[in-house]
Image (cartoon, rainbow, N blue to C red):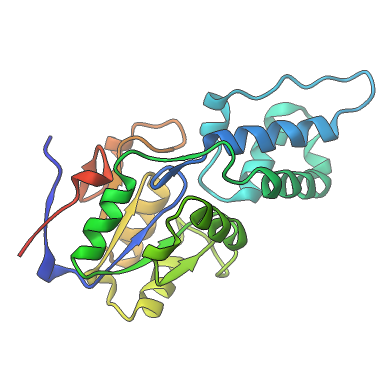
Length: 230
């Protein structure tokens, strides 16, 4: 299937997800999760390290959800230690943020296409804002965005529509004229509820489910496939 061709006159702005859309951060998640589990390990007890495939199914709904999912998967005694685990995870993630991650092929090209089309751009992610800003800066992507919002920027996270509606407000664009670009059902569900058109990339993290089964307006094998016509 060919990537969709967008009509420039239909859009004023775009919101772009971060993890799984612009940057492959799975290695960062795996490293932080396993460092957290090592901190929680009791004498004489050993937790098998989580592999990338397992962690990939758990990411996308914010750090809190990831930590709870890891604890539930790792052992029945661990969920009660959530506060300790979350503090450990945050500490480790802050230390390795960006070290095990790479910008997806086509990511820069896609951002340049959106920028050259004259759209106002926001990065909208469920990653904590400080970590999102740090990652964008480390990967040389921060200059593309006039706004950056994280999972702690608003009262609720994607798939709730609130972050999208608040971001549209900050960009000064109507939801119907603000494109959402993401990688998962979180992005698509939030966009549908907010009244935003949505494109999904096919290579990201969709909780282990086929992304093409998600209700979206189109799919991209690469952000380099973004095209606008007059």
